[in-house]
Length: 309
Ligand code: GLU
Image 1 (cartoon, rainbow, N blue to C red):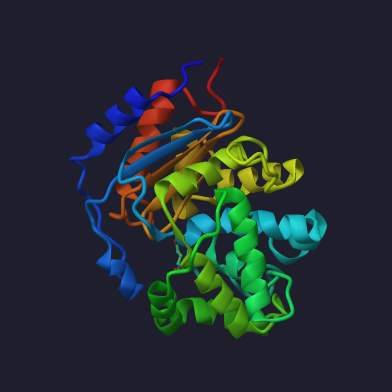
Image 2: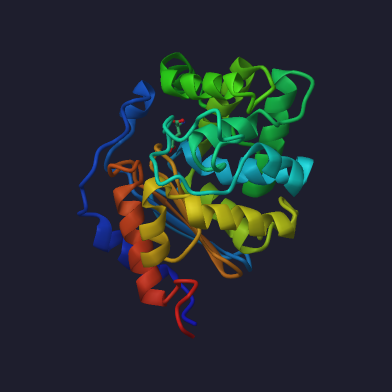
């Protein structure tokens, strides 16, 4: 099996620098300030080797790339059965912010990668109050990144004051009895989780931790139980790319997660985590360059999980 090296990463960066399709997210007003041309790549192997190219140390908000990690945290906190009782693992085929598939017959949001499921997962975070809960979440994230991350207050406030759709989703879930916690607090925590500041390098280490079955390859610290890594990678594979998840699984064949801040991660289990930062998004809310880089790397190295070997 070919191991990705710096020359390959540099070639991927060079090959996709000219790709300027898509647009920076603006529905969260503060995200519109992102540099549309920023482009960073980072890769972290299960053995702890880190390769970086371009804007790998530019900070941006993690947005939905946080979802698999917070889901993992909930699995470690409460166990698989308790979490499955609150959130399913079925793909929706709908957009990330869909309200359509929430109705009173569905006992739980479909999966933890769409907003409804992620808000329900955030609501499970233990702690005596909002500060303790945020602290619990940041401590869990620090095990994945290897250092404490900050929350971008401007992005948090921006989404908090304009996130009416997420508020509607949360209130519908409250109405249907899908969540019990104080819904405004759960929303605040979800918005804070989405506003955590990371770099492409951070995301690569986080993805590399999943590739290394839950042990951070740089610090040696366990961030997630191996059985829960299996669960997290499964929902990333089937639901991580929202309404493009099927096509992605077919073409790229790796568990992945995107965020509207421009981050994208893909995991080659047992091998490495890859992260791309490039804020121009396609219609699904995925980084255009990120998707193209993953497709190219998967093809070049034959990474598809079901590639005949
Ligand atoms: N905070 C964003 C939202 O809830 C995350 C969406 C995403 O990154 O896909 O709309």
